[in-house]
Image (cartoon, rainbow, N blue to C red; front, side, top):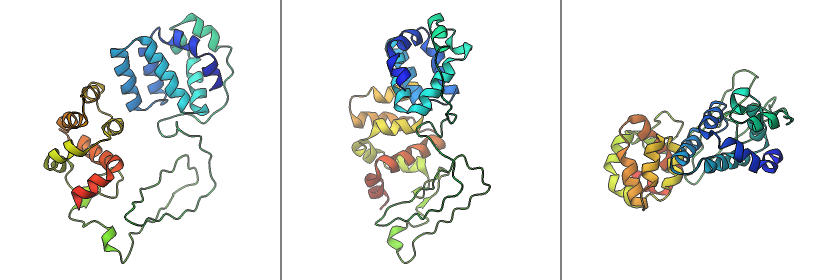
Length: 254
């Protein structure tokens, strides 16, 4: 990270020569998420190439040392650094540390292999336990036993009202598109965290930009609901609403 910060002004100068190509490479290498890629593409259309380079470097630095080293390693590729002779000459002098390969699933933290982990997960007072993510396992099959609480029917939704829509949530509506249609007015008036919800949806950059361009939360939500024309995107929105607007969703399903 220190190398990038100390040479940030030079990197901005070199990367802004062709930020579109750089974005393709960082996405291919899994250094940024699809949502981050969409934001940077939007910036490239609406602002200067310099802004794209600045925001990209900020995103890379925020992800920590592991991703910074992977980014520098990427710059050593001749297909990448050919955009600038100065960049090509400089990156050859940079020493790269060995890291865990970066990717969409581990770019936000350094992960150490474990010979074995035993954990007990519990939830109370209406809380929900989501399935854990296990990565880099080389020890064979992993078994996870999860049991619903007994003797507390108030903590479990009626099965004919909710089901798993296939995205790992323990509680989502049965028909996501129908739910959004039925509660259109309530969602438009009450959803507040629309920008962070958009980050989770991975909408087409142009569609996301159209939503963000609206001046008020109701206008943004109304525009966002206009794009709920497929089962998959409707399910992603419902998942995001559970994540960022849990109280509202609980009220709608009560």
